[in-house]
Image (cartoon, rainbow, N blue to C red; front, side):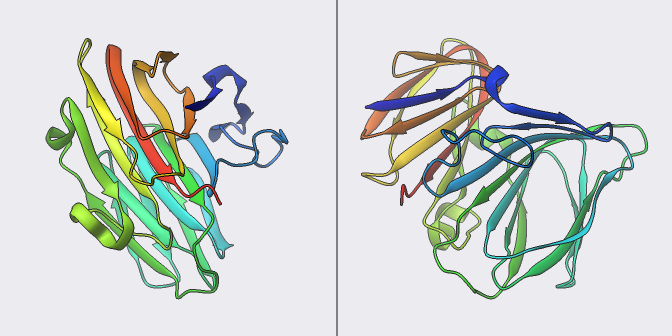
Length: 236
């Protein structure tokens, strides 16, 4: 098993006042040639957005974008006619395809929003743009895993234009599970949202990321109450 560890304090960081962002992979002014991507996983941004602030209308194309709100809320609007608010336990997906213009704002007057924004290279370029969002019951992942993104929307998950599986996990201290790779011969990137995990003998703490390759299964144990995200992605 090959392991790639990205400790939280080695991420890129940019504080724009209204936006406090950490980058697990090269993004904007953070450039590290050794951290350009993990397979098709291109961007993993850990953003905090001040009340009433956000990203104005801007374009994207040929990228799969997944947003997971951890705290607060995020209001979405795009040129496809979609408009709505996502909150904790919601997952938003957007296939930018041939091009989409959208905005994302924190609608709260007093609460900072916290979210993960994740970009994946698409399986096919130039597809019809699409948007979707769904609320997932956190009780389902209590001391286990809950699939939130899957090919063709399997297991009640959302789908994107890529052969990727995203699973949200939660483990109480001392609890463990065995994770079986969803994409044999590819890779899994595990991001710890909170708490501490031991993954295949490697300790991974809050906001750390761990990439795994060349494995079929791995043991995950919580050294402290933990929430985490597992992203199984093609490596080429």
